[in-house]
Amino acid sequence: MRDPVVYRGRRLGLSRTTATRAAWLVLLLVAARLRLLAPDWDGGIAAHPDERYVLGVAASVPLGANVCAYAPDFPYGHLPITLAQVLVRAAPGHDPLYAARLLSGLVGVVGVAVAGRLGRQLAGSIGGLLAATVAAFSPLLIQQAHFYTVDPLGMTLASGAILAAQRRRWELAGMLGGLALACKLTLVIVFVPLLITALVGGAPRGVSSGGAMSPRLPRVGLGAACAFLVASPWSLLTPRLCWRGPLQQSLMAAGHYELPYTMQYSGTLPYVYPIVQMGLWGLGALATLSGALGLLIAIKRLGGLRRAVAVPAWSWALVYLCIVGGVGTKFPRYMLPLYPVWAAWAAYGIIWLWGQRRFAGALLGVLTALTTSIAGLAQIGVYGQPHPWIVASERLYERLEPGSIIGIEAWDHPLPVPLPAGDVSQFVQRTAPLYDDESTQKSSALSDLSAQADVLVIASRRGYGALARWPLRFPETLEWYAGSLHGRSVEVYTRCPRIGPVAFSDDPLRDAGLDVGLTVAQICGTRWAVRLPHLDESFRVYDAPLTLLLWPRR
Image 1 (cartoon, helix red, strand yellow):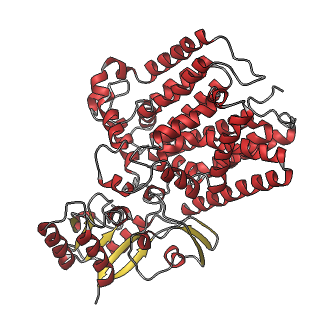
Image 2 (tube, one colour):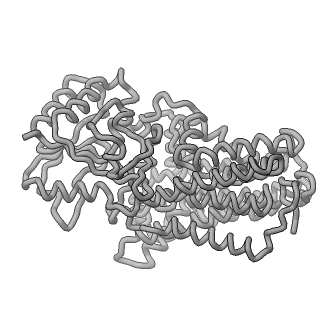
Image 3 (cartoon, helix red, strand yellow):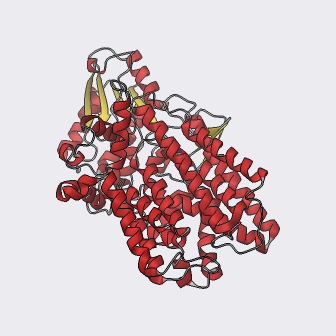
């Protein structure tokens, strides 16, 4: 067995044993179970807007045609569209939503395997199993595998490129990097570690460099160019048309212009916010801290910062965190490409500690795997309950008469959703202009809506959660929320991550300074609840929204 790339402690000698192979098989089967469970988690209402947008573009563009010509402002790469087009045409006349989600789940399983292989490269056989365990049960990785968006595919391809570079397979690294770029523009960052590795020179001690520096970059470049040309030819043939959307998306991510769904990041700290969210409901607190520990320890064990930077897995973690962790828009999914390598560095840190203090290392490893597994299993608990928007919609159809006025929030999902139980068109939906600047006209519109609406629908935390971060800018709107909650009868619909009678959730209402007089356990409908600190809205707003129906008091 070849020595691990970084870890040079006592060889564990388990990689070829039956027990280790069985453990890998079990881990991958568990990862598949966690990701392929409940592709109908929203009953087919397409609760995630990016999914329906991507699939809608795929259905409207002929296979092989220029996506940019049909959707000029399409903000992502073309590889996810091509895969979705194959699904659309494989079953004409059928909704490809569930099939696309299953594909995303399978991609997520590959991502777990890549994380485990990176862990084995860095920390030996046991480290590989530990990294795969952390990735398999990561709540965010499980959640994202249930969505057909560009992020899971981009994560797996970018992480695969780093693994290939770690193993000095430069053409493969370039090809996977090119395919990752064909998913999302920001993944061009994956080429930075490859460039650094070539320019800084020198592989970790005991590892073949795979050739001199001079042929490395051409091999990477050739692989990347060929893969990108095949996956996204129109980006090269019509660059002005195809790069406009991704560049606009990059400007939004950098915080150069404001949208309602980016307002939640007012006052959040760069680097601190994404790392804290990773610890709260991304990888888990101990896995996040262990990953940081592993990155720091690697500097010393590799012989200084220069040699550490020459390791692709180390420079990828540093460069990606420095660039993406500092942007103004801090969606947790933006950090997704970092998760497999972070899990590997967590394993490295734990194995190092085990080599220094056996008991402490073993305890940290067990607690890391346990805490992340609890969070991952709790996330799966979400999908065993009906989606709140469906349950709330059924209630609206049951209680409202035709012609009733429903007040809904701007930029959130309008309820009721279309169901066999009723027809949305029988109701009058009026939108609350929540994100407009405060004015007499806005105050009048909100007051009129409160007076006329037969029910006010707060579909998720998106509105009050974001505006509460701007108390000086939206004081009257926040007063309207508080008055609506206190002046009306409130019905709560949600589903929380849970394991048996214990739920795990933050309290977005109280975080926003609002109150409906219920504990977290009562909101979640469980006997007990672990209240978490404030979570990013995207951890909950699509698959586990907190939905409120506000009825006039009788």
